[in-house]
Image (tube, rainbow, N blue to C red; front, side, top):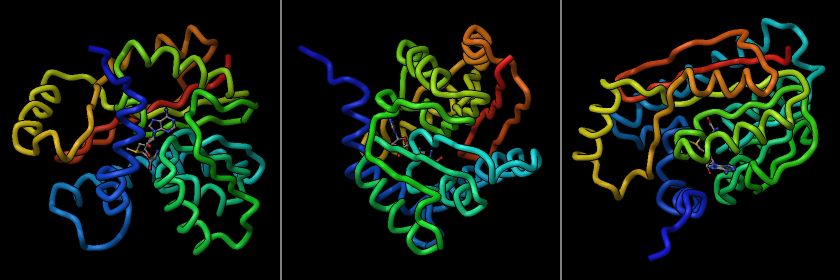
Length: 229
Ligand SMILES: C[S@@+](CC[C@H](N)C(=O)[O-])C[C@H]1O[C@@H](n2cnc3c(N)ncnc32)[C@H](O)[C@@H]1O
């Protein structure tokens, strides 16, 4: 039997039940469970950390940025609001539709943010900074290298990635989570070894500049910024 590929599964998920789940998690309403609220807080810490890094550099308004797998615009919208020229794409048209609605409410200058439904691996062009947050978790290691290769090819100066780091504790935590949440609520999630990702970035001509870990009870991310050598 032909296995359905990961992208098809991810795209369908984020256009159907995943859309509803993540739209609420990435919102500010109280229509979330305690676990979802914890994930919302953890994810917001990742967003805030990236914004802090970029603001610290003091040149945000001069940058062109590609936000790969932008979701509902949690990062793209504040980046565009801060003056960066942002191109953001997501494989799910529902997520992009929601991002457009949210952008309309807060962005005075709509030209700062271009949002498109597109698989990140079909995006072309060059951007000063390429950012891809909490997307690699949806892909197995064999697809990771191609994705990172493509993303680095688009990055003139810098790439920022977040992913779920592989640890034995997390692996056990994930198994327990799957037992209780069942497969209906989630899509497949893959943890990645941080040294594999850092090696890939170095092989593509980047060096690690900043890194951080974000962890709440149910949200875990490793965040890495790499710049061209
Ligand atoms: C967990 S969400 C993270 C969204 C956003 N990066 C954030 O941190 O707010 C993962 C997103 O990645 C998108 N995605 C998954 N695979 C993708 C691909 N190949 N190209 C573009 N977007 C993708 C999904 O549709 C979903 O919106």
